[in-house]
Image: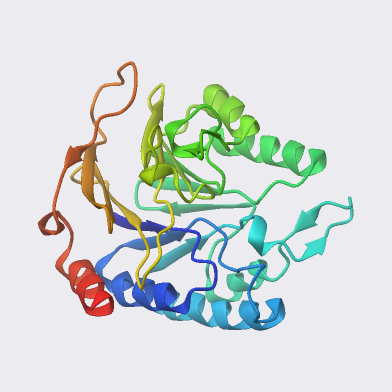
Amino acid sequence: MIFLVVGDLHYDLRKFDWVTAAAPATDGVIMVGDHMEIASTVARPTQSVLIDKYFKRIRAETALIVSSGNHDLDTKDTHGEMTTRWLKKARRHNVPTDEERFALGNAVFTVCPWIDGEHQRKAQQARFEQDAATRRDLWIWVYHAPPDASATSFGRGKSWGDSWLTEWINTFHPDIVLTGHVHEAPFSKGGSWVDRMGHTWIFNAGHQHGPFPSFVLIDTQEKTATWHSLAGTQKVRLDAEPGTGAVTAEEASLRDLPGAIVHAAQRLAS
């Protein structure tokens, strides 16, 4: 199966257009949060309505999973912690979102909310424990912030990662964690789009300016993950043995990507 992973679109409608165009070439699109932009001149309720329409369009083309980021928070829950009420409306389109478990092929996805406080942290801990008991061949987490002390969370000279996530990875050992949040990590010295903690792969596609998003393409049959951005294309093999030190990605090219995705990138970038 081929999964397209994007995040941090921040209400850039050109990027939503690109994802919609690329979606038919995939078995699923995973959007890892920060769909909205809190600094936009467009009111947040208006943003949410239009983004929901994009979710519906993408879901009409392929499977879609969406999680929340810090820019997506819109209301307080009963414990006074911020949550994303608007995002849960995507379930009307058969789109799994925060606090849900979703099986697709041989993979099980645990979709995680942006965690704003202790009650939400404890609830997420319980969901991980429950999902761990029913994991399949491939257990994938969708979690907006990358773990701390990881190259995927490094930018502007320090880590911006999530210490709770690091603890959970070391406890439950998922196969893959899909993240975003730290825009510059793949483009910064000391940062990267890919990292590994034990046997767990961590990916952060980053954020770039321009008409199409930087993205990660995961091919579960070929056991590869490919990152593409304006900075170039790189690839890792998911069946590589865990090593010590930083993960080394090999240089790749657009020829390694499905033709429909290449066409979408070239058409909207021209």
